[in-house]
Image 1 (cartoon, one colour):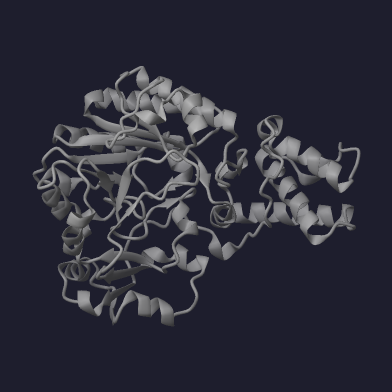
Image 2 (image 1 turned 45 degrees about the vertical axis):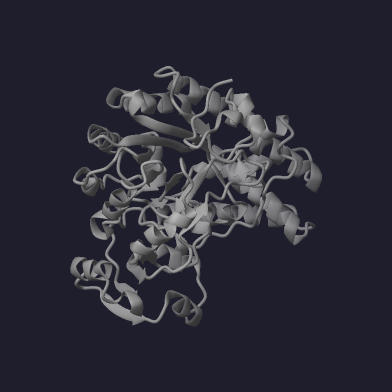
Length: 457
């Protein structure tokens, strides 16, 4: 909790400074100045008083403008900092995540009556003999009769599991952000919740269930697929959970690979940050299964992707899957912008192509850090020592907090250059960016096909 204490003391000092020097300001204006001073102090490692000592006027509008120029220098120059997101800072010791607290061993396992004797429920009983099992009529009824969900419940999600029978929400199209160039991706909506702790994860502002949900009736997904299927489609898990994080327990991959042997005109993707590929290596597939890893420099993994496997292990597992005949995908998403980022991402890409042949890669996606504005306070509360919020993040074309446009464009052009140095034929696409960003990066959105192969303009 040392980090929490440090940031809590910084916040108290900032609030005291604003209260004593700007007593005439209303609540909202004080909040904005506190936010700007706090973020500058944290990012630059300076005291809040030193930030305002050289400002010749404490008039609210002049002070705010000076602070915005210092906090968002690139965005200000490009007229993207006119309306920065400056919410109240909420730090709470009870919400802090302990990144050293690892493992998944649920204290409580709630099983819907219809799933009580399912194979998945039996595996949970065998894996977790000390867990308390409770039968519930349905997850919906359980959530309706229990207290309102709070962030503390999200932090405890790894201690609770729900085994359910899914009856409705089997598939959906990828929920692309407003005004972005869409991709023909479809979600096999299997499991909700993740055992990993990534600082930037959008699920921490999305999920309102106090545990991780596992459907026991994967056969119903298969029964429903015929009415949803489109020839040539790309579909996969990994949107609302990590595809393979607990595959040794759920064994979801085995029936999925078996099922899609009968649908060779469809590509199915597993997305993961784990090394849990044992089941995949012992089952027979038809070449239409893609195993994908999210990649970042090890420095970023250490600081932001807690409990996940290392970069070296992810690449090693990818090599083993390639040797077993699987196609691979890599997602540089989110790319994190930091001092020295270009050199570090070049190392990552170099390591990939030391082990993986370009022709083994089905696709590569690139996307920079972005999230719904309300997630900013969640990240701040759960990970008070995070560094990702120190960057310039301003409302973008879809109102999500993003790096300024020029920074994003430079990131995309640099990473594309790194990738195409190894192969000009790599299928690459940008994730959740508008058409102007595609063109600025040198990619043609019109080149997207059902397999997401795009080309340079």
